[in-house]
Image 1 (cartoon, one colour):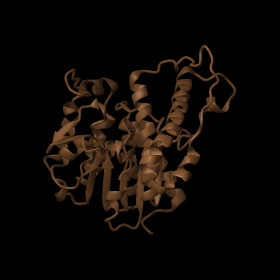
Image 2: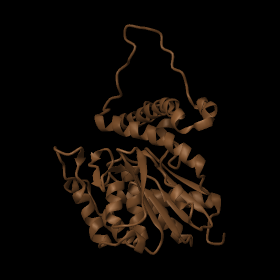
Image 3: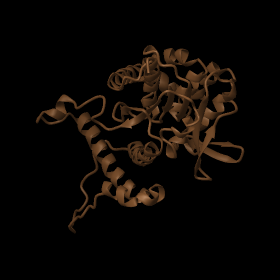
Image 4: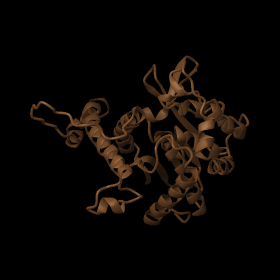
Length: 325
């Protein structure tokens, strides 16, 4: 099968569990494409170095992750990324994409040309570093006159690069699943008791994301919709507010700058994802809920790997995509 791995920060550790579950079912992965963390995990798998990386990240504590952050005050990003990439570079040992045992594509975004860029040749570590450059978090990189950043902005789940791969099935992994997918609803959500503060904040973020998503659909329809504008318009909702002295209510407690940035990217990527999936529908879509962990929770590797395995097993049981296909 061919595998498309989406972007989503630390939730991308779930890709490791997805791959483990697929291989345990006897699925032979014959091609991989990835965006952002999907490019990192997919590239390591294609190079045969994913087990070592998985073992390393399982042992990372929150303090270890903080030590890996190399902050920068003079570059257009909070983190330079050299420490984060150091272990990856060591594992890859200079391997080139065209020499990998299975076809691999990493997707990045050319910020100046405003289009996606595919890496299918050249040093694998370079392709991964370009693809994971999340705006305002990891600094972008300049390569051959291109200003490259996270591929998730233009192609959150890169299925198109797999079109030329001869595979029995194509599996896509989204790291932006809806809140009630995979994990289900929490007991607090099902009861009438007041929600704990953390749960309330999570639900507030999800609600904000849905509102942003509707507005983004309305604005982006003209960009991606082509002749299907009337169909896409059914996703929009008009908000009518009567004039009042205090129209706006208080912001959700604890909502920070990073939260707003994450919600904004989630909204944009969810819109782009829908159009991408409509153009290249996979045989199986595995969705990791976006509330599973925050984008920068890189100390939760073991938990995300386990979640990826669980959701993949459930998806495979329902789809029967196994080696006997």
